[in-house]
Length: 280
Image 1 (cartoon, rainbow, N blue to C red):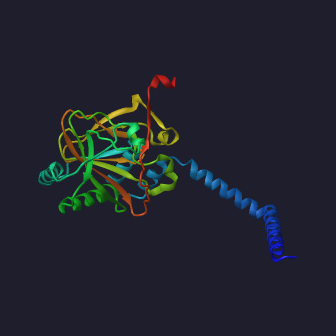
Image 2 (image 1 turned 90 degrees about the vertical axis):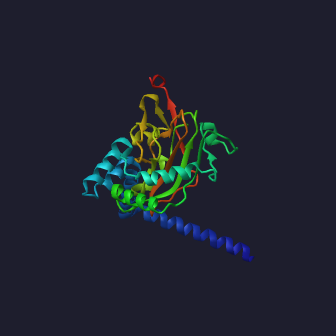
Image 3 (image 1 turned 90 degrees about the horizontal axis):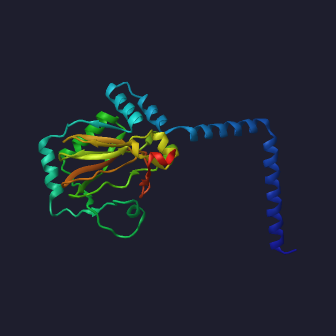
């Protein structure tokens, strides 16, 4: 008998032993109960809504401001921090944003552009914010004050909308179906108004609704105005899009994440907008 045949016979015997042990284990009542418990726990984790994790974080705080902000996140998907940025820092940021040295790259305007790998040009652009020292210190302090110590601002970008820029395709900044994976480390996004007239289009649907469906309705559309020096903080699963502008507008966009947050490079999750009549 060749060594090859012996080797194959050993592999077959090992597989038979493993299968025998497996079925013997399945007959063990303790093993059966353990597996039932594991399956039930997994089912409950998958069933948990997006807002469950927001409320879980909220309940760790006694501070009234923090609890209110997380309540607004859970109920509306966003909250607004009114005009706290100084005029001096606003002027510095506007000057930097308008600088000819800044090279703005186009942001998708339509769903087709977002799904395409081809180059395109739009009236909506972005570029990095240079660290101005006082601004970043202020921003970090603001986030801790309003969200607690585990969140930090990252990926600071200037957003530019040129005159005639139309509404952007509705999307989430992160995939709502990854809610279980993110759990307590759910991502947030923010827009800081450094010019009058800054705004954001949102769809005021329940965050749990968006997780179950890949669409929102026209009737849920809202246009949220962001006063000068104010910050709009919104959940990464909130359906939104850049608004239309009749004059040039500059603002700052950034992400707010925990140290344990892990994101994909392309996290944008496109959302269809349906006419309410089509659902009847």
